Image 1 (cartoon, rainbow, N blue to C red):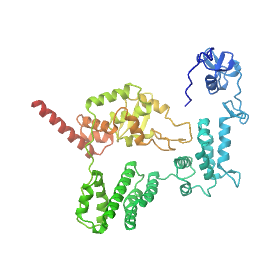
Image 2: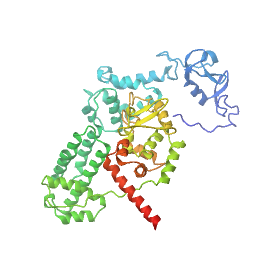
Image 3: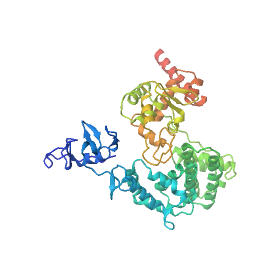
Image 4: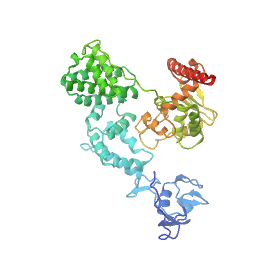
Length: 484
């Protein structure tokens, strides 16, 4: 994104720019007139094919159309000394791409060899081939990125374990993603690995050594064992597992402060634990059941489990208003509008929306379809408009993060889909995704049988059945009120 222009100053620069007609300092006089610094920089970045057939930088203007230097008579040096290509120059007569390439080779070169190790060659090639070289160079020249790449260059062998040994930081995880996307290291379940790292640090919060060993066993044989059996750990599982262990640690520390060992736990202790705190203390019920099952706690004890409150849902009128905002205005980007349509029209969970791939979407001149359950749903006009825009410009294609991404909603992390929480927050300007989804399902169950809705939208029949029961109850209350 270019920097915003300063306010023009007619008093200081009385002659306006011939291109933007604003009063800024003139830095060049071209055949079409004096050009300000902003238009000068912009002209160097205009690429295409001139009317004469020349392909490259088109800094000139002829009858309002971009033209090459030869046709327009514009005098401008855009010839790279290194590669010979026409491009905006960075320094020393070299273009941004050449400077980026030299910088990458310098940072990733093994000092003992003076060259990039064969393992890192694909990674280096990906960085050097970024479509927006100036952004890549700006990122790489940040002190923390430069330091990390130099550390990566000297690891004995590039593996996940070797990357784990480097200082923990967002940069480490971003570069790890690049290494995975470009085939340097294999793909792994990142949430599973992240949970393991989190659990190690969580154990430090346990006050009593005996309880620390108990929590370690709980994490390993209950949570991590279950995660290892999954094809891929979902974010919901990851967050629930963290929350469960956190509350379990708080519970055990509370017992330690009272001088109570888990093996000597009594019902009165559980009642006091819950009475003294918020309802989320009931989450410790999950740990208690495991402790009783493994004979770490006495049998027969019970805790009131945590129950979520009743979530609000959008009314039918609020849904109609939200649909109007999503479909008929430009309040949201095409990406956000496409996601919002799946939530407000088809009642989809935001986590499922975020993980949608282009294998689930078909875009043709005649039709746009999306597979939500087992059936492909056609999106009529105007619901198809943002999907067509997203298909033509999926985004995040100018860096090395998504070389061959199949995600519909690409994220900022290499090879990953958008974080559901981020997408949820972006849509919050129009509606709460949970309230919108619940409102949509509530209304849909009035219009079609449960099996059809479940199969079409990809829900379990029992889930839709609950919404149908709730919808029928609400309708019964309405009828009773009318009769009264």
